[in-house]
Image 1 (tube, helix red, strand yellow):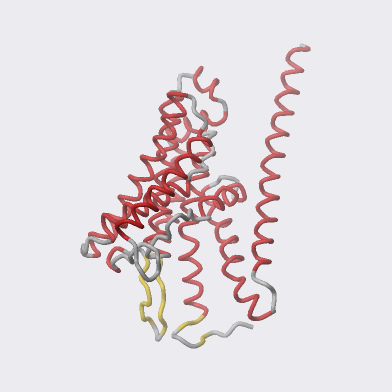
Image 2: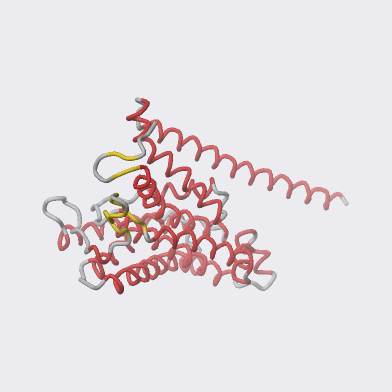
Length: 319
C-alpha cells in the first residue's frame, strides 16, 4: 500500500496534484482533436500548434519580467491566438485550395519543429540544460512547491480552465447555431452546402477553434507542466490526444474521463514499478491496447454506418 505521506514534504495529495498537472495539457489537446473531428477534419498538427504557442508565449511573456497578474492571462491569450492562427491557416488551405488537412498539418509540424529549434539554439539556449532558458515564475501556469499543511504542492492553474473549456465546448456544439453548422459540415459537406450552410467558413472556424485549444495545451505544457522547451522535439501529447479523443468518443466530457484514465495509468507506472516490481513500460503497452481498441471501435462504427446507408439506398432504388 502507498504511504499517506513521505519525505520531501510530499504525499499522495501532492502526487494527485502532479497527476492533474500532467493531465491538463492532454485535456486541451484532446478537445482540439475532438472539435476538428466534429467538423470532419483530422487535426494531426496539435503538437506543432502546441510548440508554436508555447514558444511565442515563452519569448513574449516568459522572459519579459511582467507581474504575475498580467503575465499569466497574457500567456493564455497568446496561446489561443497563436494556435488559432495556425489552425485557421490549415482550414483556409483546405477551403481555398482543397489541400488535405493531414498533409498541411504534418508539414507545419516539421516547419515549427525546426524553425523554433533554430531560434532556441541561436538566441534562447541554456548552456547547462541545452534547452530554452527557464521562464520567470510569474509567467508559469503551475504554482510550484506551494507550502500548504506542511506539504509542497504543484498547483495546476490551467486544470479548472480545462474543465470549464470542455463544458463550454459541449454547450457550443449542442446548443448553438455555430455548433450545429460545424456538426452538419462534418456529417455531410454536400448536404450542408445544399441546406445553405457556409461550408468554407465553418471549416475555417472549426480549425481556428481546434488550433486555439491546441494553443492552450501548448502553454499549459511548456509554461505549466514544464518551464522550458527542448529543441527539435515535438510533444507526444499532440499525437496521444488523437487516440484519447477517440476513446472519449470525441465528446467534451468523455475527453476529460479518457484523459484521466490515460494519465493515471501513465503516471501510476512509477508506483507499480516500486511497489510490485512491474516494469514501467507495461503502462505504455496497456495504454496502447486501450487506444487501439478505441480506434477500432470508431472504425467499426463508421463501417456499420456506411452499410446502413447503402441498405437504405438499395431499398429506395428497389421501390
